[in-house]
Length: 287
Image 1 (cartoon, helix red, strand yellow):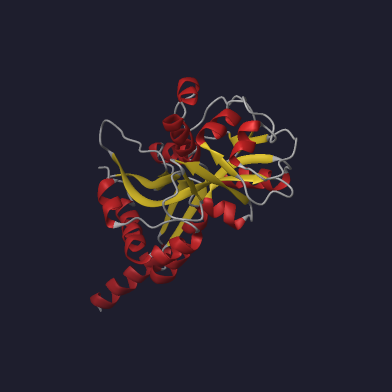
Image 2 (cartoon, rainbow, N blue to C red):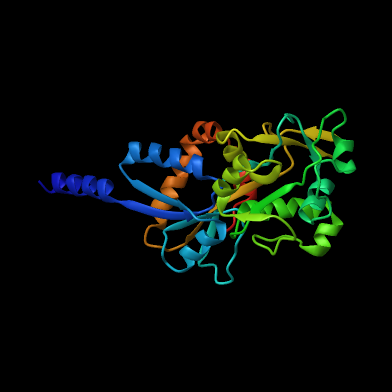
């Protein structure tokens, strides 16, 4: 009888347990599918709200969420929290140009656009990267994130590494006072803006670019041309789980992460992100 009672209570616990998380919009599509698969296997419900990387960290620090997801390698001096590697993915430069189905940009041109120094699609520096392409004599409608964003962190890290002018002006940040452009919330907001705005340029996680059917610029880097459709693309981001080490549901979150590591690769690939390999999990692990 006692054994039956314990089994019954365990079943009720598994059925009723819910885990609440929030954070990066970069991983939204993958997270939705991973959560469904985990609930189907365990009956444990995982709720995830995509509010941006900095928002996810803040909610965990306030005790309002069981975990956050962030592209920022966040550390606290008291070691009460930890980051656990989750996934990686490419960041696409997306654009809306009628009649232009192939576009190449490089780090210098991208930085000059976001610094407000290149303002027209017909600029000679863009033309030089796109010989034979009929670029319109139209103003570039720049779109960026206004919220605290891990995607912005990775994007500005790339520009900081490859443009001295960007490094001197802005550097690396999750949010900044942009020189030009219109700010939108989340990868979703930027994707929608690009879809609806002619002659626009922005940056979003690859899965959002793909799911919205947006045109993706190729990236000229180190004398090669890279597509965000492929592995080896130089502009990418890593995502981490952020949680309190001794939080009430930290062990439950870790069980979900273990499920992702063991069974999540196919779902992650299908979502447009890239599973971590074993070297990533060790190299990126932060206690």
